[in-house]
Length: 456
Image 1 (cartoon, one colour):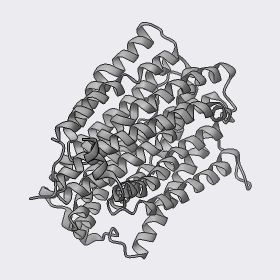
Image 2 (image 1 turned 45 degrees about the vertical axis):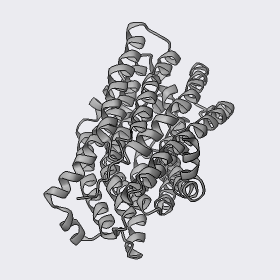
Image 3 (image 1 turned 90 degrees about the vertical axis):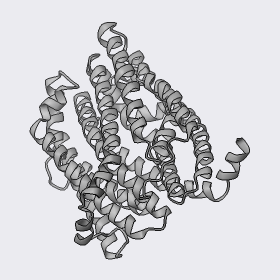
Image 4 (image 1 turned 180 degrees about the vertical axis):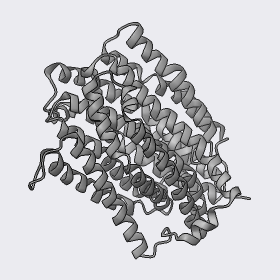
C-alpha cells in the first residue's frame, strides 16, 4: 500500500496541494487574527473585556461556521465541475452558493440583533461581561453578510486552484481591522475612545472594505465567478436547489452542532468563573492560528479530491487520501512542538492577565499543544476527504455522537458535578477527537465516501 501512496502523491500532486494550501492557511490566520487583535487590544483595558469579546467572538464564530457549512455544498459541486471541465457549472454553482448563504446570513443577523443578552447569558452569569458582549454582538451582526459573500467566492476560487485572490483581499480586510481597531478602541484623530464598541465597529467596517474590494476586482476583471442576475435566475430551479441543500444542510447542521458544542464548552468553563473564561478566551485565537496550516491542507485536499472524483480517477484518489492523512499527522506534530516552545512569548502579549490567570493559561497551552496533534487526523479525514466525496451524513452522525453524547456530558459532569479545576476540564474537551480518530480512519478505508456528485 505504501508504494501506491507514494506513486499517487509524489510530484505534481504535492505541488498542487501546497499551492492551494498556503493561501488558504494565510487566509485562515488572517480570519483568526481578527478576534486575536480584538482580544489583544481590549486586553489592555481589563479581564471583563477579554471575557466579553471571547464569548461574543465564540458566538459569531458559531454562525460563521454555519455559513461556511452552507458553502460546502457549493464547494463539493464546484470542485467536481472544475475537475470535469464544466466552466458554466462552476459559475452557476458559485451563484447558487452565494444566494443560499446570504439568506442564512440574514437569519443569523436577526438573531444577534433581537437576542444578544440571551446569547451571552448562555456562557456567562457576570452582568458586566454580558453587557459588554451584547453590545459587541448587536453591532457585529451585519458582518454576517460580509462573511457569506467572501466565503461563497472563496470556495469557487479554491475549486479553480486560485485561492490567492481571496487571500489577498482578506489581507486588506485584516489590515483595515487593525488600523480601525487602533483608531476606534483607543480614540485617535479626534475620535473618542469607544472600547469594545469601537472593536465591533472596526469589525463591521473592515468586513465591508474586504467585500467591496474583492467583488470590485472580480467584476472589473470579468472573472468566471463574476456571476450576474441571469446566472442567479438560472439556478433558482427546485431540483438544483434541492440537490444543493441535500449536500449543504447535513454539513451546515454538522458545523452548527460542532460550533455550538464549542460554545457549550465555553459555557462549561464559565462555571469556573471569569478567570477560566479569560484564559479560554486567550486560547481561542491562539488555537485558531495554530491550526491554520492543518485547515489549509484539509481544504486544499478537499479541492484535489473533488477534482479527481469529478475526473473519475477513483483509484488514485483513495491512495491520495491516505497520503494526505499521514502528511497532516506529521505537520500536526511539528506545529504542536513549536507552540509548546514559544508559549511564553505568546502569553507575554496578553499584558492584562492577572498572575493567577497567566498560570492557568500556561497549563491550557500544554493541553492545546496535545490537542493539535489529536485534531490533525480527524480534520484531514473529515474536511479533506469524506466531505469532499459527499459523505456528509456519516460526518454529521460521528460529530453528534463524539461531541454531544460523549465529550460535552463528560466535561459538564467534571465541571459541575465533580468541581474539577479548569485545566482538567479543558483536557476533557479532547475526548471527542480521540473518538473521531477511529471512526474517520475506518470510514476512509471503506472507500464508501468516493461519490461522483455531478453525474446525472
